[in-house]
Each structure stands twice: as structure tokens, then as C-alpha cells.
Length: 303
Length: 311
Image (cartoon, rainbow over all chains, first blue to last red; front, side):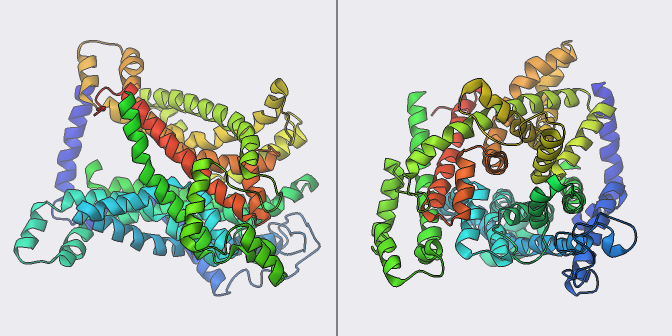
């Protein structure tokens, strides 16, 4: 059985070597990702959510979401698109609220990633490249940040900055960089003594050039892998923060809708909970699977 | 062993100091004057002045930081602004309910997840492996809030299998209130854990010693339960540390939904009341719990892995 497995491995290695010869890391990864039908499907789901979010942002769909479309707590019906998921306590369309919630969730994922990724890359690169006291200081700093359980740090920041979506962006952005910084630091330690970096050094490349021009492109796939996971956890955290009343105010978010559902369920009103949960389920599922597939296709170690 | 523990204990001091610094910067400097948050918009100058004096906000920052460090060391966090109770008394009252919910939840989850991880690693590639992996990913993707609301509405309210919420301090009765929150916690964390342990165990099975064990003719089940399981203790311990923040989040949501008067409920109440001293104390306390959990794991590594040096 073992020999069989080993033989298969050898064949796979040989054939994949044949297939990937002459391709760059990114071309190669794209080639492998393209073959992964489930990953492509998940990527399409993420794309669809992004399109919905953009369309909602520009007011092309589900707008105005706070228009009264029927009696309070109308059950879902197929009569019209607005009543597809019924109405809430004020007679507003739950379907529109779900779509507006998509906009909030995707924007939280995007903005918090835009904040956390540069921080994570910057600290990780500095620590891994320079080592010594810089490394000690940065490692101490991120160990400290990660010692405060995430939800407490999120609550503390949201509490201090006041309620609203800006605090959610910032809170998620400045708590989420630690895992990326750890990975980038580890990769920089490995890469800084590789031959291509030494060659760049002997050709007169300075520190900044070596960090950003030479090493960073070679570790950048970890940023993509991290992005997928970070997007997902940002969406999950936004829902919990909004649910705790620390998040989005006066706008429909999935967390706020789930919070509303707390009191509605005993009256048999299940559609707000179902709409928000199902919408969230598919996007989180897609990011979950996509994260795994990206790791498989981008991480050269797992070829 | 003892010197090792002592050294590890010393090495937590910089981290603890860092936590204190971050919490202090967040609450006492970035946050501006917390008295406005506590009193709301309609406070008059005299009230603000009194409160500032009571909590020491009129002192210079370095003295405030010193006082905060003293609070951490003496475990005396002052009084709650909302309930006027001493915070350390609130913590003492809350820690029992929290632990009686989270400790069993944690052990049941770990036991189930490790067993399932072993099972699917044993049947790797077969349909049961695929099924469990798919179910895990699906389970991970549902919000914890949805599980809670579903449990509370269908299992407790509709079917009446469990009480909807509430708490009892006396012992066998306490269990009936804790049962459903425990089940929910286990279901929520199982997906992630099973996948984690499956990967960890599969990594172990590709090691040389497993091939040697197979070569000398050991049965697969013996290899798994005797050799692989023992060696997988290291990633299992690692996962324990990863679990602590999830335990705290779980405590938050489960306690506040099911009316369990633990640390999570106290924190959520404090957030709703803008109870600044309590939130600050809870943030510090949770960080200390996390650091202690890390420390305990480091010590346990030495028990399961003889390669970990005590020097």
C-alpha cells in the first residue's frame, strides 16, 4: 500500500514537473486553480457577492431599502421580489435588507483587509529581515496584541471609538494583522539568506530594494491566502459586533438582523434570521473553501 | 522541572507588561476622557469633576499607569461604575458559572474532535473522510448566533427539551441549564477542530516512524492508537491555546443568551452600560487567562514531548 502511494507520488511529481516547466509561480498557481472546479465555483460566489455589494452601493438594486413595502411581518411570498423574504417589523423588505447587509459585510471585509495587510507585511518583513532587536521588539509587540483575546480587543476598540461602521473597520483592521505578520516574518527569515537575495546584495541592492523588490514578490502568495481567511473572519466578527450593538447603526447588517430575530422568533417570524444566516453561510463557506484551495495551489511546499 | 516553570513564568512578565501598556493606552489615552462615556451627554461639570477624581483621571498619566499596574498585581480593580460593586467580587462570582460551562464544553469538544480526527485520518480518502470534512466546512460556515437561536427556539421553546434560559447554583440542577449551551459550543467548534486534528494526524502518518512501524508488521489500528496518537499530542496541545479566545467568545454569547451569570454576561452588561472600569478589568483578566493558558501548554509540552528541553 505504501509503495503504491509512493509510486503515485512519483508519477504525480514527474507529471506535474512536466506540466509546470517554464511557468512562473503565479501562472502555475492559476493553472492549478483553474483545474479545481470547486475553487472556481467559490471564486464565482465571492465575485457574485462583490457585484451585489457594488450594485447596492451605487443604489442600482435594493434601494431604497427602508421603503415600506407591505404590512409588518408579512410572510415570504413569491408575489414580488420585494416580498421574496417577507417584511420586518416596519414593513420593510427583508430581501432588500439582506442585500444591503451584503454591502456592509463585503465592505468590512475589504476595508479591514486593506488596513491589516500593510501592517502585517510591514512588521513581518522588518522583523524577519533585520532580526536582532527589531525582531525582538516586533515579536514582543505582536505576542502582546495576540494575548488580548480578539473579541475583547474588538469590544474595547469599538467601545472607545464609539459605535459605527468606522470603528468596526479600524477594530478589525488593527487586530487582524498578527497572523500575517507571523507568516511573513518566518518567510523572510528563510528567504533573506537565499542565493538570489545574496546575489542582489552583491550587485549593490540596498535594504529597501532587497525587502520590497526581491523578497516580497516571492512571499506575496501568503498575502493572498491570508486575504481569503481574513475576509471571512472579518465578516463573522462584524456580525457578532453588530449583534452586540457595537457595530453598524441605522443600516441593515446581518448581525443587526439576527439580533432583531431574537425577539421575533417567538412570534413565528423566522425569515429575517433565515435570510441573514443563509446569505452569510454561502459567502463564509466560499471563503473557507477558497482559502484551502488557494493554499494548495499557491504554496509551493504542497505541490 | 521547577526551575523550568519558574523561568517560563518570568518570561511572561514582558508580555503582561505589554498587555497592561496596550490596555492603558487604549482606555486611558486613545479613548479620551472616559468620564464622558460613563456619564453620557447630559453631565454637568461638577459630576464630571467628582467622577474624574474618584477614578483618578485627574492625576498625571504615569501615576494612572502605576495605579493600573498596582490594580493588576493586587487583583483589586476598584468598583463598577454601573453597579457600584467591587469588580474583584464580580469576577469571583462570575468565574464559577463561566468555568462550569466552558471546561466541560472544552473537554467534550476536544475528546470528540480528536476521536473523529483519528477516525477520518484512518479512513483517509474514503467516503466517511470526505463526508466528515464536508460537514466540518459546512458547520464552520454557520454563524454561532444561528446555532444559538436555533437551539433556543426549536429545541428549548418548541420541543421543550431544555430550559430556554436561566441558572441554578445548586449542583445537579445547574447541569440542566448548562446542557444546551454546552451542546451548542461543541457543535460550533467541532468543525474547525476536526479539520485541524485530521490534518495534524495525517501529517504524523507520513513520518518515517510510521513507515517503520508498518514495515515491522504492526496493525494499522495499533500504529494509530499507540504511535500516531501519542505523537499528535503536540498539535493537540497547540490547538488548546488557539481555543482559548474561542472559549471566551463562546462564553460571551452563550452566557448572555442563556442567562448564565458568568464573566461573559458581566462583560456584555458592562458594554451596554458603558461601564468603563469593568470592561478594562475584563480585558486585562482575559489577557492574563490567555497568557496563563499559554504557559500551561508550554509546561505540558515537556510532559508529552521528551525532546522539549528543560534548559
